[in-house]
Structure formats: C-alpha cells, structure tokens
Image (cartoon, rainbow, N blue to C red; front, top):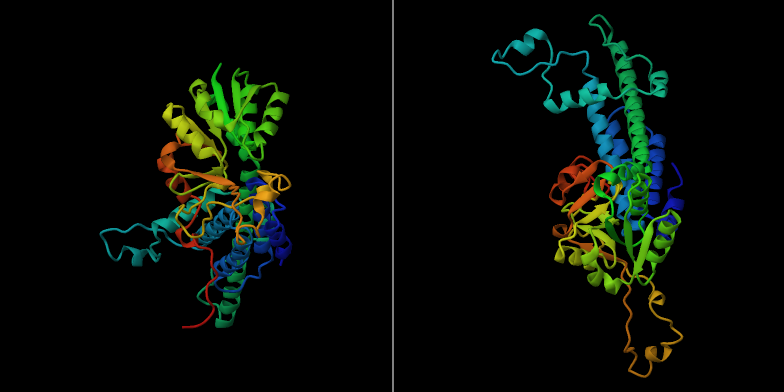
Length: 411
C-alpha cells in the first residue's frame, strides 16, 4: 500500500496549503490505493470501496476542516460504483437487451434477460468511453461464453478467468476515471477563466476579498481579452492577504485600489460586481469562505450588487452546514491580532484569580447563506444557488455521505 501515514502527517501539520493542492494530492493517493488493492474473485467493487473508505476515514480525521479531502474521497467512491455498474452492463453485452412488452413469453422466446434502465444507461456510457491502450494490452479479448458441451471443470476454470478479467477491467476503469478527475482538478482554473469575458464588461468596478487564485486567474483572463476594468481589494485583516493579491494584480497591469475591511459598506455603492473565492460550497448552496465574507455579502445585498462565487468542482461538498462532519470554523493563533509583549499586563493570570480579563478570538472562516449568493461559476459553467444540489448529485452517491468503514463483526 502507498505511504498513507506520511500524507496524514502532512494534513495534520497543515503542510499542504490550499484546497486545490489538497484535492489533487488526495486523488493521487487514492489512485495508488486502488492500483495496489488486491482484487478477489468475487465482490471486486466491494473490496475497492472498503480500501478507499478505510484510507478516506483516516484522511478526513487528520484534517476535518479541509473539506476537499472528504470531497475527493466521496468522488472516488462514486467513481467505483459507476464503473462497477458499467462493467456489469458490459458483461451482458452478448445477451439480448429487451424491453418489457405485452407478451409475457417474449423474453423467454428470445432467450435473453431483461436489464434495468440503469444497466442499459451504464452500458451506453461505457461504450462511449474509449479504452486505453494499457487496458487493451493487459485485458486482451473478452472471454467467450462457455459452450454447452464444455465440461464442468472447464466451466469452473473459465468462470474464474472471467471474474479475474472483470476485476482487471474494473480496476483499470477506476484508475482511468481517477486520472480524469485529476485532470479536471488541474484544468479548473483554465475552465473557469474562459467564462470571465461573459461576466466582466468594459469599465466595470470589481470588488474582492481574500487571496483566491481562482479569482486572480479569472481577472487575468478578462484582462487578456482587452477588458478595461478596475478592482477594489479589501485588505483581509488580520493576515492581510489582500495586500499580496493587490501586488499580483498590479504586476499584471490591472488598476487596483486597496481598501480596509471596515470600508466595504462605504465603497460597495461604487461597485458593479463582487467576485470572491470559496473554501467549500455546501449542498444547500451556502459557502464557507474567508472571514469577513458574510459582511461583504450583506453589503452587496443591501446595494443590489451581484455576489459571484468562483470555485472548482472539487470544492463542491455534498454535506449541509448542520451535519456533524462539517466544522464551520477553526481558530488561528492570537499572535496575528496582537503583540503579546505589549499586552502582557492584560494577561496576568494571577492578578484576577487565574482568569485574564482579555480574550482573543481569531476565526478563519465565515459562512455565507445561499440567499446572499447571486451566481456560482464552476468549471462546468454558471449555476444558481438553488440548483447546486442537482450538480452535487452528479458527483456523489448518497451512500458515501458519511465515510465510515463497515463493521466486520457478524450479527
């Protein structure tokens, strides 16, 4: 098995920065897990699901705040389920696929079983997906159905060979699908940026908060298409990521104005659009974003300014904010806010019966409810907040919302 413990240590120590890097490395790790999982003769899909679920549970526990880890684990589990359905449908490709008719004996006369609509759809998807050269070389031709004159021993041997071939095809199909997922993560900036000219027009004023690479690439793309616009950047205290973003935008030739966070309400009336990034997009269309984002969303709503969130599909989370698996916040070090040397006299534990009079709270995230979001722009296009659950349903299975290994104890 791959070195899962090393990756878990990186997650625990926050050595992987950003949802994009976290999602990509999680997908690569799970691809190695799938590749090195030994496939039994039966229940091949179940063995892959158990292996991914076991590793995924450890990864999520290592850093529950980084929701991209759980998102990718659930995506891979959904991939396994879909590929298993596709391979099951392909195994029946030599049989007759018939629809239910008024003649009850029609299926018996044709000698073919009636497959479900889901199996037919899965077979169609599998047919449209081209097989890789590696799969063609390793799998070889599909095993022929045993003839009636074959002996029982030959039938049993061929049955094991067929199951082994099916297991190989399933594993290769899952690995190919995970490779496509990694490509999707890598290409998300480009796919989102291609939509910039549809939303940013000439002589507009854009306001943003935080330092989102997705937002930065989105603005770069509009500039490259000869759009002339101005950007207001809130400084994003206490880490002041807005200062860094403003410098990066100026280097690209964008006219940029830095404002304090407290000036957002005063400046919002001059803005045509708010464009921000997200830490995660929840199933109800709510957004977990850098602290201060809810204040910005309220200001945008008050002045009827569109509030647009740009984020890759790997940030779509199938959970709701009230789910116990979701940690809406974590606290950063108070040293970002105050100098302990200057405030040491306010933190004298002995002078006030062991309890200091001064407390420092430094939250990392805000929660923006869906009613404050005007539009989501992902690598699949623009979406309304009310329809995000439909988009999320295409990526995840309801059986994988809670990542937990099945108990091995018998009832």
